[in-house]
Length: 113
Image (cartoon, rainbow, N blue to C red; front, top):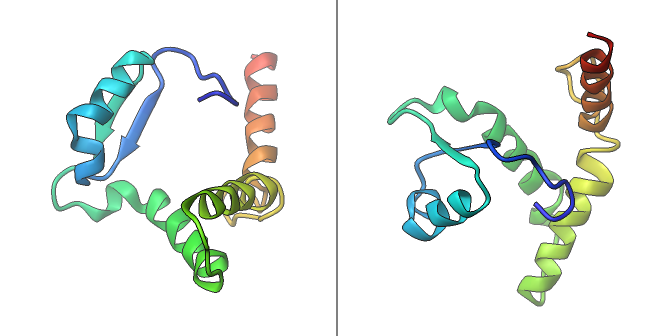
């Protein structure tokens, strides 16, 4: 939130996990003007993209590390996302780009329209 400063109305989609269904988390979304969205009960396809990301995170990074503190784990995951997953890791969809390249492409298309 601090880094990207998303606009009010952002949709946070999640599975039906207790942490996302909690009153505290829903209050946090509301405080920032975000809308919560949850997958349908029993439909794993609603979260295929998120599940794929967490599978990659676990297999490519977390399973090989032994963290001494929670802070160390948080920093390592943040580094993985910002320094590798979003900026260098190619994704078969869309067109073997990384997420940062794809976002820039979409923003360019939006400005041109």
